[in-house]
Image (cartoon, rainbow, N blue to C red; front, side):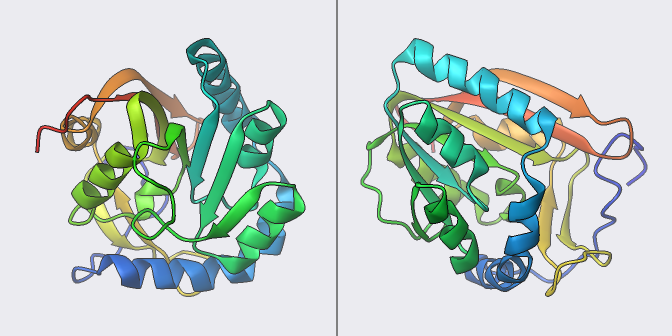
Length: 226
């Protein structure tokens, strides 16, 4: 990656196409090992600010039920639960799920394509830095599943690192096994979301180093166009 404002801090190693379930299995192992550390460090202020802004939208929309994917130790799910929403936190790591439950949040082991939530049952979805582990090949199936899960006009917040189009394993990852990442340019991300969701807001955040985040608030389209 040549753009210093992109996700260049990862410098991915290209790999053969990795199946969705293989990626999830690697994440489960990696995050089980790091769950306690992640739980101890709390929520970064810039992520909390994004969460507060989305919460204001949910209040205005009269949302009552939110599902979080890739919930980690549950800081965001606990926040939405405390504001009065019915919340379900889903994560592939049993250890992360344990921390979610300790915070009083309904939680279970699952992922974007393997969960127990009925179609049309969510007013809102929250995905903080979890869709970046979904390959371009698998992303249409995941977005279609999320489209089905949301009620008409439901809101979906996602945030990922990105800037250039690149996917693979991170050779410098401190997790074991190394995690799979898929980074996308703004144009690619917009194009892949367009059949399923209307973009309400698209914000680029840069922490002044090499981390560039794409934060999007989306609204479910009435009918997916694919």
